Length: 309
Ligand code: MLT
Image: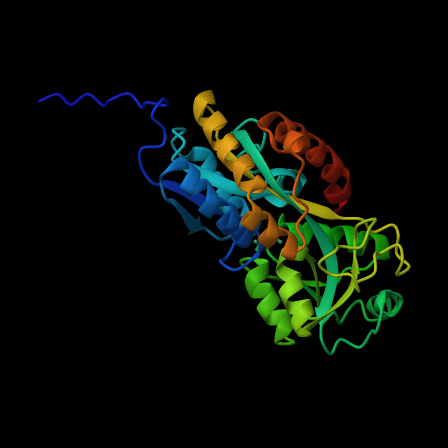
């Protein structure tokens, strides 16, 4: 008996459940953004989108898996500034290349970086933080989500500006890292706003500054790094959907349209904005714009992170 596999029909896509790989622990920024957007995309597409959290190696384990998945539109990944840019200089033997092994689908959200600390960390403001970290460089530690993650790369940038080398404490995502910060088990962290807003508003952690030129409407009392005395530190991450290379163009177009429709949805926008995300303008969400962003981000982060390896 000879069974011939039916050709994958991109025309009827999708006809079954789609898996969205999230390369970090549940509850962290990438997971939260993915869940908000994919819930809406699933309605548009008429199929479920199941989130699969695959952790390890700063998101590169999951991203390798996504690069090797079938390119039929049923396995996607929410990657970010770490998995699809910062990991390139940090992992000389990275098993994938963000440009060669993926089809960009849609940019979902910009996520400003904040300098955060446990509630009882002694410095009161950013100037004191800088002085304290410099004076206690051997003792302080910084939580992150693994080498190559956004939190790791963002703190490497901060550390290079301050010329300090704190002990890094890796977690499987900044969801668990945030739990450790709230519990006072680690000293500080450079994290995406989406993870920080609920805790800052609950008063469970300290926020010294947001590393963007303007304050964020979701955190009007948190000064910018420029206002707080460290203008050199500017950092904003982003999260985006990618498909394995060779996924049919019609499938990419269907997914991209569903993602951009989700970003225009009132309820989705409200939730993302409440968490401080920057919703990209329609022209910046497209596969072409995302390809350009990935290229420029690799070029931007490579000189920053090369010396740290
Ligand atoms: C997460 O979702 O845990 C983060 O995006 C991790 C990071 O890259 O810092």
